[in-house]
Amino acid sequence: MNRPLKLTCVVVLFAGLFFCSVNILAVPNYKGLHITQTTSTQQQALAFISSIGELNASPFWPHIKPADFLQNIKENIVQPILIYPGNGTNFCGYGALTYLFLQDDPLGYTKLLLQLYQDGKAHFGRADFSPSAAIKKEAGRLRYKGVLDIHPAEQLWFLCLADHYKGYLNLFNRNYDPGDEDRFWASCNYAKFNRMVRSLLKYKVQARGTDLIRPHTGDLYKYISGRMAAGKVVLFINNRVVHKKSHVALKLKVPTHFIVAEKITLADDLITLVYWDYGGRTQLQMSPAFFKRIIFGITFCTKKEADAN
Image 1 (cartoon, rainbow, N blue to C red):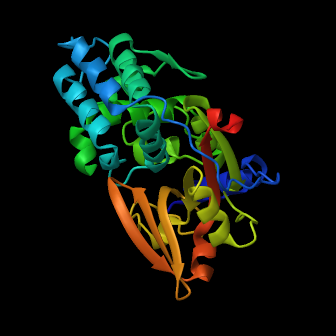
Image 2 (image 1 turned 180 degrees about the vertical axis):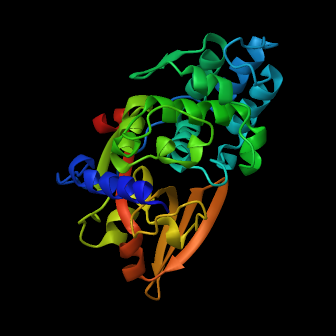
C-alpha cells in the first residue's frame, strides 16, 4: 500500500471514533412480542410486474436491457436469499439491507426499482434518489464480480444506494469512478447502515455497538438470541474470520461485514450461528469468547406497528 493511501486509511479510521453510532439506552424485554404481518407479499409484487406487461428501454440506463431487468427483479422477489453483493466489492451492507427489504416489502422494492429505471430518479420512504450520470453510465457494465455481472437490477440498486447514502468512510471519495465499487466510495459504516434501514424500511431500529468498539450487552448470546426471537437481527462483524477479502489491503481487526442472523443455538459451550450473506446461508460454530471477539454491531429491527401490540 502506498503512503498516501495508508494515511487516508488511518485518518478515516480515527474519524470513526467521532462519527460512529452508539446506542446506550436500555433495551426492553421483547419476550412474547408478536411480529405483525409483512408490509407486502411476493404475490402482490409478482402481480404488479405482470400488470406492467412489456417494459420499455430506459433512456437513463443505457446498458440495462428491460427484459433482463424485469427478470432479475422477479428472481429476487421469489428467492431473496440469492441476493449477491459481488466478488471483491464493498456492497455487503447494501446486500443485507436488500435481503431485509425483499422479505418485508417486495412490492415496495419492485416499485422503487422500476421507478428508478423508468424515471431515472425515485422517492421512497424518507429517501429521494437522484443517481449521478456516472452511476447511470456504469450500471449494467460491472464485470468480474461473479453472478452480479448478470444481475442488472442489483447493479443499479447497489450503485444507487452507495451514490445516495454517505458516511465518514466516504469523505475522501464521494464521486463515482469506474472500479469504485471496490473502494471507500462504496464502503458502509455501521451508522450509515442503520440510517439506510430507518430511511427505507418500516422498521423500528435499535442499534448497539460501533465501528471500533464492541457492544456492551452482558451475556452476548442471550442478548442476540432474545432479539432474534422477536425480530430481525443484523450483525456487523470482523469479516476476516468469515470472508477473507483479497482486495482489502489494510489488515486491521475492525468490522467490515454485515450478516443477517437467522438461527442461533448454544450447546457444549459452542455457539452455532446460521446467517445470510453473499447469496446463501452459512453455518458457523465458535466458542462464546470467539463470538464476542468478532461482533461489533447488533442491529435489532421490529415492525413499527408491533409497538402497539
